[in-house]
Length: 170
Length: 170
Length: 170
Image (tube, rainbow over all chains, first blue to last red; front, top):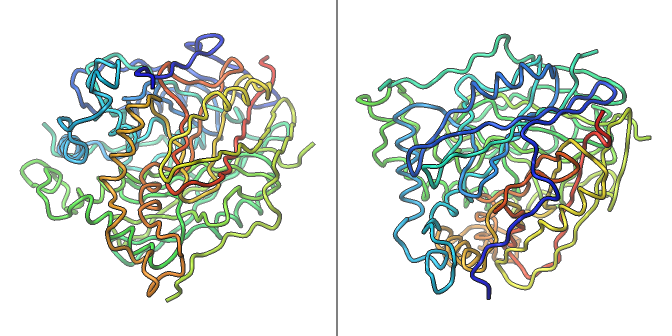
């Protein structure tokens, strides 16, 4: 049984930005770089994402946020220093970093990051959110923030934002 | 460090309903109000969502359901009284309401709802689902139900449903 | 209180394949059958999904993957035999199969599969992912794989893949 992870290869790399339109439909995308400084860290992407949606000109449609990494997550929650600390403590408690994992064992794995806990935590949080756009803005509640949950930092992470919809309502 | 949570402010509030079309593409949305009566409660939205999709006239496309709240979730599962009880018991067990959380501590937080457990449970379940529409109806399996998981009720909650797609197949 | 689960009935069954276009927008879908051989099993769908996207001709848009089952999940992670074993062990640990569940108790449930643990595990992983398409290919990171997590096999499972977007960029 192989100790290696499967590599995904596109024919061409994902473009940093992309844009297409047809018959009133617009699809536009850009990449957001996130620099993290801790092993587990929660970065608030909301303002960046809201600016991207407004700049796109899309009035009614969908917004997709996609983390390009297995140990970097995207999810929705409140943004508060106290709650951030609670979320990190919960992730530490629910997936113990120090337990035995095959992924961390050279007898079974060629990965040297010792980050099985990061993969399991990411499995719980997910790697993307798909949101609505309406009235030219992101549909989001008063206390909702779009959060990037770094599970194996510090690193530079790439998030791709794509908006798809009708640019001018008729 | 601030004890407060960040507030998200759109330039204009999310419209109760919205609708746009261009070149055969339709985007239509409406809000669904959900009144809950327990702290943790599972509300079945399936019939409401199926009616919304049929009424929209969209034949092939996507349906987005978005909870406008941090402690109100949307997810898929079977709907049965016995399983509802199991899901609630599991959420109680996996995130202990009575543990110490900074979010519940006035020294660190200005939130007076004492609902850190609600935030953590919502982090596990997620706040939205994006589904397919085909043949003018929601794509959903025989035992799948679209569930709204209240994590901090009783409250009145707002869910936004948006459908985007081709209104008449060509 | 009923011991039964609610059944979802569409007016017509979901078509095995569907396709529509209007004004440059294309929506195309097909079903992917997955045969599993273990109770908990992780099946890598990435290559199948990438082929489907390329064949659709959609250049910029969204890809939805939907499991038609309550105890069959779809999520993103790395694909490696060692990590697969860690993920299964974690799911076993976080939701104990042998605990008491009302869903498994004939006094409360008419389900004879004894699979409450499968439902709870699926609640954590989710039943769908919505991904981006750009440059005619799936947007996916080097180590990301699209995984189908069987939680109550062995069974034959149905996953529906739908792509929606602009077929030729302008």
